[in-house]
Length: 431
Length: 189
Image (cartoon, rainbow over all chains, first blue to last red; front, side):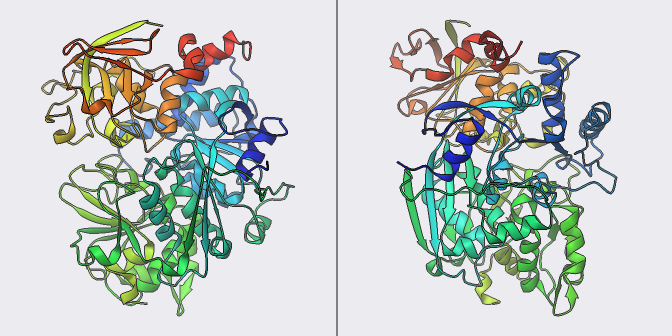
């Protein structure tokens, strides 16, 4: 029996020739990532358990991105960033990207890719559920809590149960009215929010091969919304082209064997799919945009690790181009690099920044912002009674702020179309 | 490790995500400062819409309203449906329940990270029920969990139920947390 890509990478990390789903193994971790919400408690546990002489297993493998609660007056949130700053100073952490400096990056999952920490065949853990995003690079990546992160910080090791794998194959050209967000929303509707619990979600097929790294990251990013342990896409030429500009080291590309064992396989004819939304209050509450067309909105939101990448703004920008938004619309670039790209990337000679400014969108500074509500002064935060359409990842009650707000999740094309009409709108009306 | 856990139960539905267990706006408080960390108990389960809190009737707050100082719940066992703890990786979620006085959760199933956090951090015992137990028991019922027999007794109704064995994670629960387990097995000193 062959092995899946996930099994092969985990076997290598465990120092084994092969592993079987269900086995508990100790893994050697290549990168540990943390941020301002979970970093301080992780550091506190590490000090508590390893004492005042606590040592970091390998400083070069620790990466810290403050990104969650950055542009806030909340003193406790600011204290958390200060704890990270002091820790980075005291332990001389090179891979610390401080707020208020040129090194500040923004949302960790996008920054991990941009800064070259995502390397095929490696194993990355992070104190954030969307750490599964990095799997778009043919690597194993997943989220853990503070205690597990503190354990890794001191030992470089972590126990994991080898997951069973689910395979999602998309064949055919992606129509210009769809994005990767529509594909993953469809999967969530099909398998529900616990359909992949403790499982690996592997994506392949000609549609996936045609996607940019940005779009692949949208798929793997939302694996956690199905409970997935990791999402993964085999590295190929698209991946290698992206990496060539960022890293200068050898890596190993793994692929699933033809006779690998899957818990289930799902196949889609991409040309037959439609623009989708996840209705309130769950990412698996699938419907077509057409069925909810006309729903009145109070706000549109384009941002986060899921929907705040350059490809998302290009998609939204090409629909918003030349129009004014009908409801407050927030443009929150995931990273400072994406923010810069909005100035550089043009449609018909006009920069994305100008397109969004002319449309009277609010362009905010890079951070997680209102994707997860956050402190009361967070830009774009949902208030009571709002109806929002968003390119983000979760719409459980209260996720974006008020638990009395209703959030629809959709692609950047659908959010762009809805922004210029003020009601939920199928992007095909403008394409 | 306690062998018997006894207390009043708070019943919830399916897909209670970590934003409902502890809303993100509260994640700014220290988890290691004993006084400040009581905030987590105070806000535990405050993100659950009130109509869905304390089933089957609903409308029951997990923490009695009134005082900003109150951080202990009357309920020390939480019972839920499928996919409990889905969503974010925040360890603040099982921690908040622990600070509020919860000893064990019983659910049909758990999200992976929440489940790991419960066990590796030594916050709560996450039992799985082999059936939709949250439809059989009412908020306020007095329950008794026997950890040696993996069984549950509803002292209010006199009915008994079997729970799924804790399996591979039992040694970590018995040790206290992942660090104590690693010391016991010689992985770390």
